[in-house]
Each structure stands twice: as C-alpha cells, then as structure tokens.
Image (cartoon, rainbow, N blue to C red):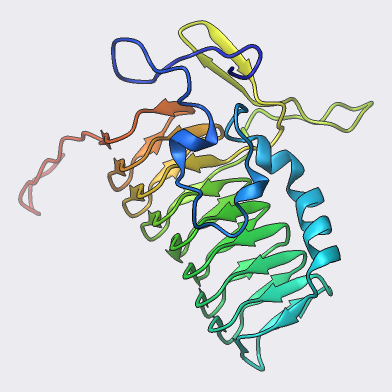
Length: 261
C-alpha cells in the first residue's frame, strides 16, 4: 500500500518510476539509526518532519537531557531539552537551542548554529557557520562548511559541499492576512500535483548523496541515494532518481585582459 493520492513522477529521466520511491525505505537504511522509529512505512518520506516536535517531546520524557561529551566554555546552550552524546565535541562559539538530540562522536564546530527541533545521529558534523533547524541528520551525515539545513532530512553519509543551501521557503510564499498561515508546498511534475502539507520543506537527501560547493536545492527537492550534485548547481523541486549526477553546464570564455568586450 502507498500513501493515498500518490502520484509518481521524475525530473529528468524517461520511463516509469517504482511507486515506492517516495517512501523512507527507498531513501534511507534505517537499521542502525537510533531514531528510526520516527519514520514509518507506507507514507511520504517528508512526513517525519510534521511530527518532529512531538517526537522530541516524547523522547525527552523518557530520556533525561544531559551533556555526555565535551562542550566549550564559550559555546552557548539554550533550553533544558538538549542531549549531547558521548564523544561529541561542541567547539567555541557554537550555539544550540533545544529541543535537540545530538548523538555520539559528533563534531559541532566553531560558530555552528542549531536552532532547535534537531535530531542528529552518530558521527555527524555540523561545521563552521553552518545552520540547522527543524531537521534530521542520519548517522555520518555532514554539513561541514557554511551550509544551511532547514526543514530537511539528510541520509546516512550525506556530505554537503561548502556553501550548500537547502532552501525551505519559496520566494513567493505570502502569509494569509486572516489566518497568518503560508501556502503549502506542492510538487508539480508532468501536470501531477502532490500537496506536501508543509509550508516549509527543504530537501530530502538519500544515503550517500553528495553536493558540490555552493549547490542550492529549491524547496521540495528529493534526491535519491548515491547521487552527486555538482558545484554551483540549483536543483529544482521534485525527485531526482538514485545513482544520478546533476550537472550545471556553462560555457566559459577566456580572453586577454586588454581585449574590450
């Protein structure tokens, strides 16, 4: 059984797509992930983001907050619902707002910013000037340099090149004056429309996805396992099949410095 209203689609490749491709099992190996129960079978892969707040609240009711790693004296922790696992190092100038779960042997490097509602697995890296909010990082996921991770899920061993931005809000999103709510993000491919139910949705990156420096994903981008996104590429919302390479093709012209034009 698949989620009701499922529409299969793809961005760049001909042919048909296995209709299970938009469920978590197709993007991630959850066998070793300590928080695998936040994912459920037979639902859209982005659904865990909707219940992330509730998951964190329940987790901290059963597991005491605490610091079991090393936190620099100049790092700042805000809120009581923060768990930092054994072997994890939080460096100078990092800021963490709870609720946040950070697993074992992670690196939260100098100047990193966790804005709350974070579930971070083991051996993860959030690097210098990288920001994360309302997101999930599976084991060994890394955002080492100048990254933005908003309302996103990074699979096992994902690596974001320096300057990667996972944008989560469309530039045309305007709050309703009466309700104060924003329109939800729809995935529209080949005239098939899927309502995610989320006003903010960044990217879902399957296991072993890598992005090059200064790559940008647009809100509602789903990228299958083992895919490479080349530097400076802007990836449109929708689904990129696994084992792909996403390239930006550009023509460079080199002329003598004294040449006009």
